[in-house]
Amino acid sequence: MSELRLSVLDLVGLRPGEEASEGIARSVALAQHVERLGYQRFLLAEHHSIAGIASSATAVLIGHIAGATKSIRVGSAGIMLPNHAPLVVAEQFGTLEALYPGRIDLGLGRAPGGDFHTMRALRRDLKQTGDDFPALLEELRTYLGDPRPDQVVHAFPGEGSRVPVLLLGSSAFGAQLAGMLGLPYAFAAHFAPEYLYAAARLYREMFRPGVLQEPYMMVGVQVIAAPTDAEAKRLFTTPQQRFLRLIRNQPVELLPPVDSMDGLWADYEQAAVESKLGAAIVGSSETVRAGIEKLARDTGAKEIIAVTDTYDFDDRLRSYELLAEAVRPVPTV
Image 1 (tube, rainbow, N blue to C red):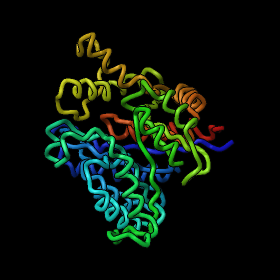
Image 2: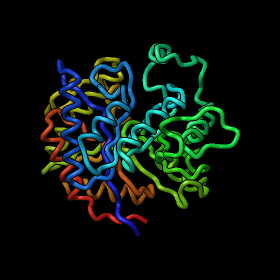
Image 3: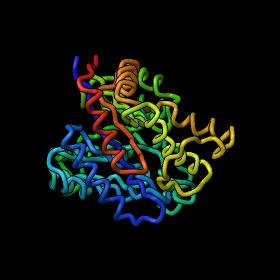
């Protein structure tokens, strides 16, 4: 038995009319706050061409936040590897590891992080299916490991740094690959919960000792904790509105909470949003603790990566405080 770990996933969300600098300043303050609360990691996601999210230059933000904190691990969840040359990623994260030794995590995914036109702007091969992800991953891990006798290209900095790699996913692909390579696996239940339990089971079944000797499952999930269930549900209308605007192809800035979503969405839109947020854990400390305990028990998760988007920053700080109080100590198997 071990104690469940807590981490944070941040998209650097903006309110309407805000400059990126304001959202980034909040992210720094949040990282410092959760560091004091004992959270394990502060992770940032790569997204492109999405108005309302300022986390596109993920490696730059990681360095900025690591420099403003002292002990919390800082990393990506994730870098979308098909968008980048593996050598460049190795050099970036090798540099970060040199600056902040023992505190950098490299979470990797294979999604584009944007739409078709964004893929084109990123100079991706438009015929890519993600099938080359294992080869890209192997190339990247080669650059971060010890040099090989026949190796021609080297990452400086990066070589020999062994920056910890974890795989992200929302399907069988990532679960299977992470298991086969003996790597940590993080499932993106905060926006794609449908396959969560099947992926967790597949990861355990496919796991072979590699970097790790036993599976290490992480689950990204929407969490909003408040003094009462009613208040938490009201705060939850902010991420509901964000996902509603996302499926409408509108900017996804953080909007103030509302008393009810009735009248704001059509029935089919409500169904789509609720399917995306189906794993969300929302409520009082007692409700949140029960939800986290069930999630950890049903998935075998060792770590919860909490995604908490509220309009008011103080509500966000409080939610992470209540989550830390509610969850510790939650044992895992």
